[in-house]
Every structure is written in structure tokens, then in C-alpha cells.
Amino acid sequence: MGRIQRLPDAVSSRIAAGEVIERPASLLKELIENALDAGASKISVEAVGAGKKSLRVSDDGAGMDKTDLELCLERHATSKIANFEDLENLGTYGFRGEALYAAAAVSTITISSAQHGAKSGWKISAQGGKTGALSPSPAVAGTTVLVEELFARTPARLKFLKSDQFEKGKLAAAVEEAALANPEVHFSYKSEGRQQLNLPAEKSADPVERARRRVAAVLGSDLAKNLILLPAERAGFRLTMFLSPVDSLAATRGFQYWFVNRRPVESRLLQQALYRGYGEHRSRDRHPVVAAFLDLSPDSFDVNVHPGKREIRFKSDREVFDLVCGLVAQALAKNRPAAPLSKISGSSSVAEPPAFYLGGRSYFPEEPAFKFETRPANAFESPAGSPNWFNPPYRYVGQIEKSFLVFEASGGIFILDQHAAAERILFERLLTEIEAGKLKSQKLLLPLTVELPASAVTKVLSRRERLEKLGFSVEALGKTALRVTAVPALFHKAADLKDLVHRVVESFEDSAAAARDLKHDALATIACKAAVKAHDALSEKEALKLLEDLKDCHDGSCCPHGRRSMLALSRDELARRFQRPGAVPL
Image 1 (cartoon, rainbow, N blue to C red):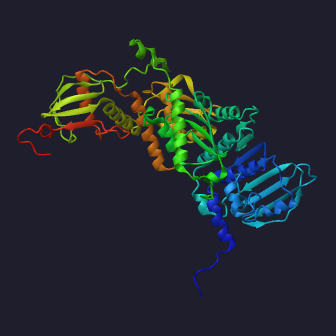
Image 2: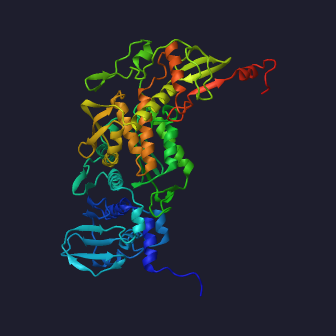
């Protein structure tokens, strides 16, 4: 008897379902796309138990008759394609006919549908891949799909899901993506009986204006208010992009949305073209907010790369890359902010930045929060246990560009990056305080509002307890905003706090490692914002104190973000560089 056997249908169907339905949000994406393909103008989503207990999607689309309803739960049953050549001219979201079949394999599913003008509707159910009989239902035009007990029959898959809060964020994100791509459709989303999103159809006759309004509704005013509109059209290529100007970049790449023929996609090529377009106008820790809608000829790309239809492959990568990169660069050049008046005229007057009030005291951004104690220069020795790089005595030589501190040490040169060094010192002090439960927090007299997409609000709130340990107190303000009522005592500006909230969104994962990363990232951000900055003038005593404090750090060689804080050239190295007699040859 041979070893190769045909898998039973019950096994093969569940394996296939795992490729299409990874989590409740991936099922929701498929159901929404079916509704859009049916011409729906209104789509309502309701989830209970983060979509695991039940997920209901109702639409007012074309609906199905009795015959279609019987076939819709079968594998590879679809109205989207009839032959292989149709794959090259796809104008719909779905085409494989796997979504409902996959859902039926790993859940209990009930579908009710009626065509417009029909006297009766029909209903069908399936459980564990076994389809029941058809029965009449009310003649409500459109289709309603109810999926219950998702993955109950595949407990291994259930174990791989993240926390309920994580899965809720993914569900909200799926609705947001569909809403961005289809501004003329009304989307409603309820989670655990509470309204999370209600996005009425945008009625403007101008499709670009409809897109602009929907982007603002989904992203919130904070992220959307300064976006640049980039419209472009070439043969077989049309682009409508909303992107950040160079002076309004975010602290995370988590607010970037790409759509090709209204399909949400992930494309490293498109992202690289975007970043290349920003070029030198973007620092490594700043990222553009982007909502980009590309319309291409269906035969110029392949979305049939993965069952999830998220990945995309272009027939001409170079052409797409060059077009997007060039258009982004041109748009940024046209919208580059003017230089401040003080730089143009040579005036030294600078407008005072707004204060961020904490507990009655105002902290201004230019006040260095890293305070130095004064002590006589060179008045310290190398104690036992000092790091290898610490080799006194040091003689302070001076400051270069008000950023780099230069010392003579044992006949060589030792250079500190003052911001990186101060950041490392403050980071380790904060880490010590938080581990000892002594990190200071201050209440805000005026709570700060941070507007975010609903999915991002859910993500941040899932980390509320961890944020409280870092000195922050946050709460929901409506469905698309957070209210921050307390912050670490060292925080200065509202912009700093918004940066941190954005980074929390980016680092959101449900694992112990991610929790450690979040703590590290939050403390590093606090330290970065509070530490001495480049271009701050320091006295000799302050420079020597910075050097002394750095030696007590666990790792003084770099800042908490990994950028080096010191550079040394020994006596022998200097002699080699200048080809001095007796020097060790290079």
C-alpha cells in the first residue's frame, strides 16, 4: 500500500481556510470586499469577542437568488471569472471563490440574501464545512453574512491569535482601509455593541475631494491637516496621493496606506520609492503620513501572489518606482516651506515656542532638563570598575559646532557627542527609577488631545497599564482620539508626547519582547526629548561632569537608539596618522 493518500475533505478544507483566513480581520476584509463587489453603497459591521464569537457584515448590494446562494459556499465558486484569461483583466476584489468556503470550514456561518425587487429572500447555513438546506427569509435587499465561533473547530489556530484588544485593532483597521479606498460608500462598525466608526458616504461630485474628506475622517485632523495633494496621470497610470510636507513628518511609519485599483496592498517597492522621493529632507526617525491611490491597467500588475491578495507584483518595477519617486520629489519641492525670517535676514530674534503646562509650572523646549552639577575641572580619578574607554586625566579642549566635546586624554584625543552622551545618561537613570517604581509623573492642568485613526486608539489603549508605569495616563476621547492627563515630569512639549503616542502605535505587538521594546522606546524618547541638545553651549565644568557621569552607565558607548556617543584617537594612532618616527605602521 502506498504512503501517499488523498486528504479527507474535512482536513484539506481547514488547511485551505488557514491560508485565506489568518485572523478575524482577514475574514472581515474578504466579506467587505464581497459586499463592495456586489455594488453596496452601505456596509455595516458588528463584532463580538473581537470577531471570534461573532462577526456580522450586512450590505445593500445586488444580493443573491436561490441558485447563487446554494453555490456560494462551495470551493472555487465565483461570479468574478470564467476562464484563466480573466485573471489578467480583474476589475473586482475577489475572484478565487474561497472566502465563504474557508469561513464555513472553520466556523458556523449563516448567509441571508435577497435581490432588489424580489418577493422573498433566502437563507443558508453551514457548520464545519457541512452545508444545510435553504430556507426562506425576509426580502431585505442585499446580503448579511453572520460568522460565529470562528476557529472553534481549529483550536491550534485560535491559540495563535493575539489579545482581544489587538484583534479589535486589526478589525478597525480593515474597515478603515476599505473606507479610504471607497469614500462613496457608507461604513459603520460596532465592536461589543458600541459604535466605533460611522463614516457616511462622501457626496462631492469631485472624486479627489471625496478622497480628501475620507482621508481626513479616517486619519483625524492632527495627521491630515497639512497633507499635500499630489495628483498625476500618465498613460496607463493615475495617482492621487496625500502626503506629509517635509516639516510635518510623523514619528512612525504606521500611518501609510497604499491602494492599487482600490485594493489595499503592501509593497516594499512603493515604500522605497516614497522614501527615495523625500531624500535628504527626512531624518531617520521621521516618517511621512501617506494615503496613495494608484489606478493601473489590470494587466500591469499581479495580485494573485498570495491567497490573502495583500502582496502585489508589478510587471515593470523600475517604471513604477521611477514614477512614484519622481512625483513625490517634485511635489515636495513645490511645497517646501520657506526659510525662517531670522535665517534670511540674519536676525537673531526667535519666536518663543509655546509652553506645555504641567502642574502650574511651564517647561519651555529650550530649557535643558539635564542639569549638571559643578565641580572643579579634572577633579576626578578613574575608580575601580570603570569602563575601558575611561582613562583620565582628561583636559577639556573645547566644543565643536556646539555639539561635540573635545578632550585630551593620555596624549590622544577623546570626543563626545554631547546629545548622545546626555541621552544615554538620562535613559539609564530613568530605567533605574522605573524599575524601582520611582518614576515621577505630573498631571496636566489642561489635558492634551491626540487624534488618531480608531484602530490606533484601540492599540494605544491596549497598552494603558504599561504606559501608566512609564508615567503616562491616557483615556479614550470619543472613538478617534485620546486624552492624555498625565505625563513623565521630564516631558516638555505636546509634540514630544504625540511622537511617543505614534511610536506606541508602531511598536504595538502582544508579546513580552514587544513590551520590553515599548518600555525601551518610551524611555529613550523621554530621554531624547529631555537631554541636552546639539548646539547647546556647555561650560568646561558641564562638559567634564557629562564625561564623568557617562562612565557610570552600563553602556556609555552609544545612545539608547544605537548611535555612537564617543570617538577616540590614541597617542599611537595620532602618531601613525602623521607618520611620526617610531610610530607603528598603518
